[in-house]
Image (cartoon, rainbow, N blue to C red; front, top):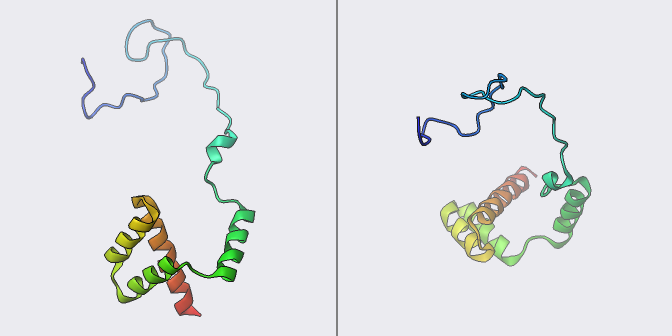
Length: 112
């Protein structure tokens, strides 16, 4: 066997057989389910936060750079909109998320 090949998974859960050697070596024990810690829901959007953000969005509207992004999206220049967003926001993920958010906002506006 030796080192791990690309096809092998290092963390495959196997049942112990109570034998000292082999792939399933070790004492057979019952697994304890871990409780979810508060840190594991970090980043999860709460009800209150969602409502507050909606109210602020309704009251204040969009920032100038967001309006520019929306114009670019209306014209169909998605890639350019992404580049502008990335310049303003700093990261790939944030830019993609902002572009998606503004596309959703445009869709909602066109429905009304």
